[in-house]
Length: 156
Image (cartoon, rainbow, N blue to C red; front, side):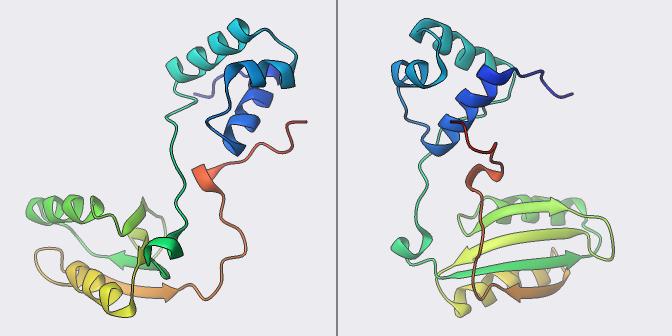
C-alpha cells in the first residue's frame, strides 16, 4: 500500500535522491521547515519503508565493469536450482533480478568486466542445477539510468 506523502515529503525525497548525504539543516533551508521537523519526517519516511537506505553510487567503468547486459532466462527451478539461483543473485555482477510475465521467467541485469566474464555468468545459468534457457542482450550505450530506480522531478 502506498504511503501518503505531502509536498514537503516529496521535496525532501527529491533532494535526498540527488544527494543522500545532504544534512537535515540544509534540507530544512531548501524546503522551508525547521531542522528537527525535517529530521522527524526523514525518520518517519524510513519507518514507513519509503526510504530503504542511503548508498554510494559507483561509476561502473571506474572499477572495470564495462559490460552491461540483460539476460532473459526461462525454465523450472528445482529446490536445489533455487538455492543455486539465490547464490548467483548475491554475485556483485548481478544488479537486478525480476520475475517477469511473458515467454521468459526472469530478467537479470548484470554488469561485468568483460565478455568472457559475462559468458561465465550465463554459463552458470544454463548449467545444472539451474539449467535455464537464456537470451542475452548486451547494452551498447546507456541513455538513461535512474539510480535508486526512481526520481521525483525537480524539487526546487
